[in-house]
Length: 464
Picture (cartoon, helix red, strand yellow):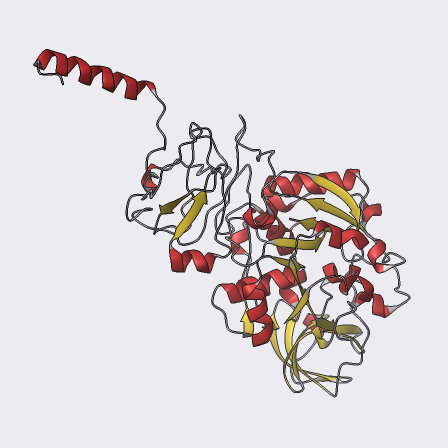
């Protein structure tokens, strides 16, 4: 026992020096929202404590953390903490308000951050601040990763959706066999790229529930005479009432009949409300960039199409064969593809592009299965819009005007299967929202260099 005050003071200073010499076992509690830098960068969950960690606030709030992080047990290993269990779904995070992490040896600690109600993004940065960790995360630990310029709420110049495509890479015909098309695979967690065949898709998946859009293209292109033109049916409103495009619009009159079509009201931008005698009996509408005739109109339908109502095919599904579907866990939703899917963006700013909406329907049983799935692969951008509409609280039957652009926070889609899309399209903006703006531009450039085939009858890309 030290009785002399000088001795006690010396011992106290020695103890303080020893404590100061060591590294802290944990970093300080997360910063408030107003203390996070503008980049809001986030690193990999398996991160040395000496590296900087930032939390990206997912909703506006005065305080990011309502109470300090509570550490039930501090890890003794100062090298790193590794993610042992991540909340599977954003809704779980909202209910539980926490994230449980583990360290080597199986011991656990709890991080309680109640304002983080939307989830977090994980990534390891290099010196450029624009690369992900080389270490692979388990499939359930994957999160969307954005790199380079960050966009919020569709605020971006439409010129960011431009790219140069050699004309010969626009596919005029489908592959001889549906699943013989090529498949570019991109892993967001590692940056890895693989070149596969579509028939090898099951080998790339990690137990995902594959969700497809089972809409069916109707023979919606109807020729009219005097004046010579055509009507493209977009959406059935009720019974014999439709909305469609008609040309030449300036020479057409409301209240007039043109063959089986009666034009009722001009809605602007070439759109009309019209009445159709009987069921559609025109020809299958093909995109304008396909200039050669299609020998078999069935090749512009998916093999699982069953709900008539679309003016265009959900083209990511054109690659599937019945045999390939049997190797996958599949669920169906329906979104009838209309004007919004293929109408190009003409405004200078993406956020100025209006979305008119498209009809969708999902059965209660299908949504329950999708909602409970550990991971979901969305086949096509139309399926993404449907799933994210429901995940955001939308009804099982309705219309969606959801505009997914860079900065969007995905709640239910974990992986995306899609074709290569046109410049200045909302479809390309959606892919950029999921894969990252700069990464999408890099992948499209790589696909062009590797001579992938583009657009409706072209090849596919899988983003994991």
